[in-house]
Image (tube, rainbow, N blue to C red; front, side, top):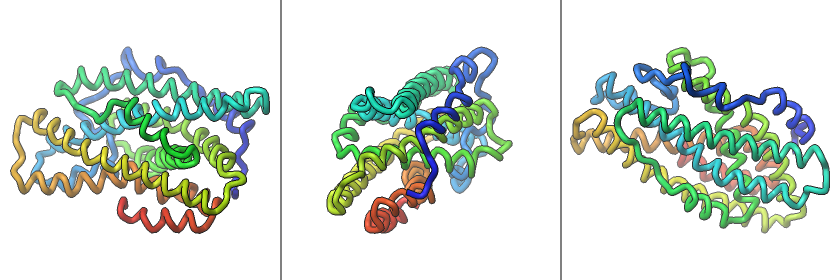
Length: 303
């Protein structure tokens, strides 16, 4: 594949970046609920002109709660997946073992970070915001698929994270600085995870026939369809949270507009932005051009 990633360099970079949860959240480092949390390119609340500016901010924050909660869900299945992948290699390459164990440890740290965020959010926002789940049931469904399919889903998520921060978050000075800090710290470690997961995909794809590669990508797409179903459910949970937080019931026309714009936003955020990331596409091309074409044919539905 066309990259220069290695376990040793990813490990070295990760060790330089390392941060503690306590340095990122808690104490004086608090969320500012007067400000938006997510960039508009992800939240897409501005087209909902029937919402007041304060109501748009509330929906932005509900989407931000969803965003980090979703990361918490996916990282709960990434953690056991990485540990299962590293277990057969414990007596092999030291750099590989150490890099993957650090990968797993950082995912566990992110889960802790997101749980602390949700606790602070629940206290500060003042209205309960439900999230799809439970996480273990979602994880079981995802992990029931071909390991290569799961690795591709994880790789898509890693590159998605990079795209969101680099294209939308990093230069947006209108976001709550604390929420932007959470995203920045998460992004910094996920940058190394994207490299490591690329190597995992290579290892899982090695020696497979073209038919088995195509079979794996069909399972990858099946996981994507499962995620898309979850996003539709989350859309309705967010609507209930918005109406509770704003103490108003949207009209049928407003609800239809909400569903149209927010469905498109969620699909781009969690599916399209990762499926079309150049690095992800490059990995698919290296596996087999037919694999890349299959995904490219499906991706526009989520963009």
